[in-house]
Length: 366
Ligand code: GAL
Image (cartoon, rainbow, N blue to C red):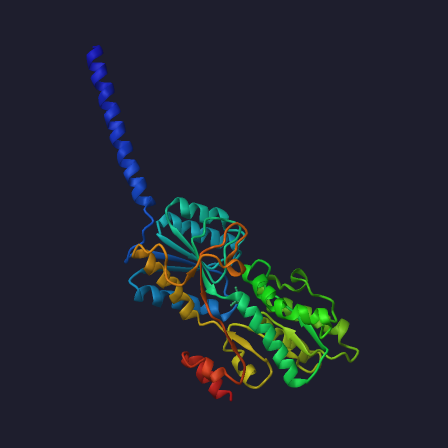
């Protein structure tokens, strides 16, 4: 009897080891993070607060198909929605998850789960904050975007009035968007020295990021704030020379507020080369925008994924030490940057030469 029991227990032990061996093999296979051609790439996009987000889905589907990957591109209108979308991509076993964060400070749990499952996490256009679980960040150089916007503001005001001091007001994007403070810091690196010298004045006194940020990038909020500032500060004949606007959507709302108040439209900056703004740029109502080609930005992420699929540990164009653009509160994320282009009516047709839609709009509005 004892012998039979011993044989039985040994058989169970061997079976257990085999199962463990098998399950650990399965675990190692699922943890194998090497993406290969034909794999599905998850792309989690945020709310469509500006036209570039509307374009992003088609840009990724085209670029991924062209590179031999399948795509699963999904938008989210809220943080919780995007958390669920990312969770579903992890569960599906997507080997790479590209994330344009609705709120980069609220995805720590989701990217930790993605890494645990063996996926590569790529932050796209906007960084993901306060976590080590981000492998790469692909975006336009957003600090440079802010610097270009500030320089355009100065150039536009000088073209209208040869010397200062100039009265300006400041607007920034949503404080839930990691880009918004990067745009603003880039702009203030140009403007603050001139404010300190008294060449620029901010009559409203609103100069900190938190004072000038715009909840959810909602143009209703920026229009209301501009109207309130005009009523309070510019109704006594004080001239408003210029407004730093972080993107076209808010820029158009600021212009509307000035027009509705009967104020001469100030120099207003923007970003995203939205089709609604190009005619305004060409007729001088909006002074400038920034061109960030969405196809190019998607292609940059897909080229990174292709490099990874070849086992390349140092993918092309990745900077491992760009603290200004890619520090996320815990690590400096390996960063693949694209160069933004400043656009005014003087260079619009040339700037859009690789985009027939925008080029035709610029030509047509001349
Ligand atoms: C930013 C993006 C800008 C603009 C803005 C508004 O993160 O980089 O190009 O689209 O969001 O949503």
